Image (cartoon, rainbow, N blue to C red; front, side, top):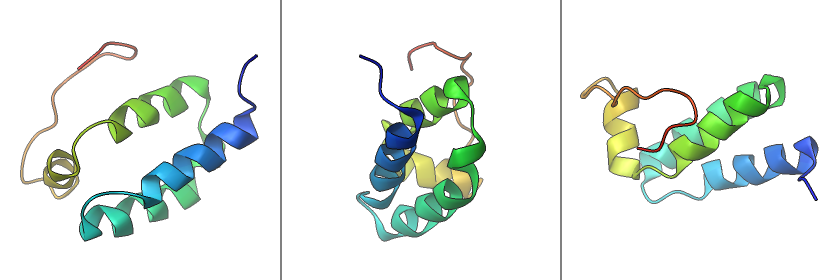
Length: 77
């Protein structure tokens, strides 16, 4: 049985809030609150894959201190 989109969005929003460093605890929930509901299934999958990355790497990428790896949709890091 497939997860309902509403439940998936709520789950991803919760994962956005429960991070390891305070900076990401502030950045990701704000992004999730504004953007998750408008994302299609492919975008939600990509966001979920991003949430699997380490907080330190994510912070470096969003603060433009480092470039994220280039990946195509659906590929593993």
